[in-house]
Amino acid sequence: MKIEPQHIVRKVQSIAQGSGALAFLDQGIVSGFNFLTFLLMARWLPSAEFGVYLLAFSALLFAQAVQHALVTRGHNVLGAGVSDSRRRSYSAAALAASIMVALVSTGLAAAAGLLFDLAGWDTAAAVSWGVSIVVGAWLLHDCFRRILYTKDALGTAALIDGFMYGGLFVLVLFGDPLGLEATATTVFTFSALSALAAIAVAFPFLRSELIRPDRRLVKKAMAQLFRYGRWLTKGEIIGWIGQNGNAWLIAYFFGAPLVAAYKAATYIPNLLNPFEMAVNNWMPVKAASIENAEDKGAMTTWLRRKALLLMAGYGVVVLFIALLPGFILDLFYDGLYSSPLLSLVLTITVISRLVGFSFGFAKIGLMATAHTKPIFTAQVVVTVAFAATATFMIPWLGIVGAPISRLFMNAVVGVYLLYAFRQSTSMSPTPRSVPA
Image (cartoon, rainbow, N blue to C red; front, side):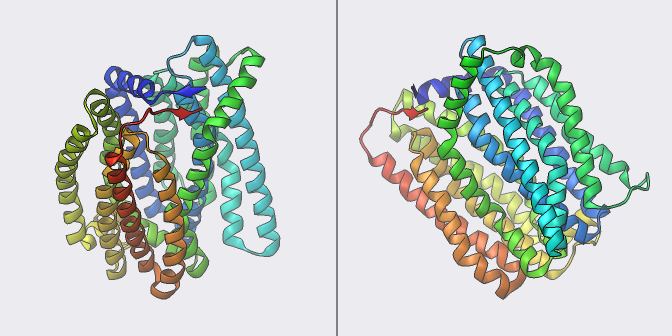
């Protein structure tokens, strides 16, 4: 079975045109509440507990990334634009696979917590037990959300994300006034409760999608999902190491409190996330449309012009943060995470983000022309660069070594992607297809 990229582009365009506002609303709910909840937890939790939470959260993101690549991303592509019965078979297969991922993740986290307890590694044990509390509900919520996206039920997705992320925000907001213990375990429990609430709200909307499917079709659909996602999963694992390895190295060398300080400083540039996500969601579709309607030259010209315009706007925000890091840290954390060292970490981080954003347009061009192999190769390069720089710089320079290694990685990968994109645009046109 082959999936034509043009077919995928048309489907994504249709969804964007019909439900773009709802997609933006949903992403705003997720990003907005996540950011506000992070700030609340940074002020409420002691630094050691906050560091434990952040390490566990990165582990949750790892499990979610694996599930999305292996299961739900394939559902978003293969289940779109097919008959209701076929889509339901993909949905049932995605749910069954997600339950398996959730059970395995919960079991592994609990087993790791027990082993770390026996070994006397308190921080690692706390992280593992925390993950075991929330990972099952977290993954099932994410599965339901992705199924709703495939159904083009973005309003319902926004609703359940409101319960998930808004619920967590409210629970953390009232944790201190209610006199609850300020621990990472308390927050993990809050996360599990909000995820379960979101699942309960979502299930009535998906009941007809998941009840009594054709088992033969479900088995076939599951095989297709796994076949589609096998390479994506490898890429996600490698990408997670490049994105989150710094925090784990800091925890290993300096302990959880320094993880909290590092993450507090480096989280502020996430204000740019909605802008980056909007660019990454919209531009590959538009670029592919231009390349299909005209040619690679027209697409490259359009991409270059848009990149310069968007980089200028992005650069203004980066310049503001880079020039006033101490003021911004005081504003967000009320002096809890303020020091010249953290100001330097924030400045280097936001400059690194600008470098990554600038070279990201080459990645968009590769996606638009269906040259995805260099993107996977780039993720491998990220991991190699991380191993070569972070493991040396963090013990040598402390937490400031982490953003320096990130800046180096973004530059190396960016140059490679730019080279790959220029090579792809110099090739003669070839038929494009993606194996399922």
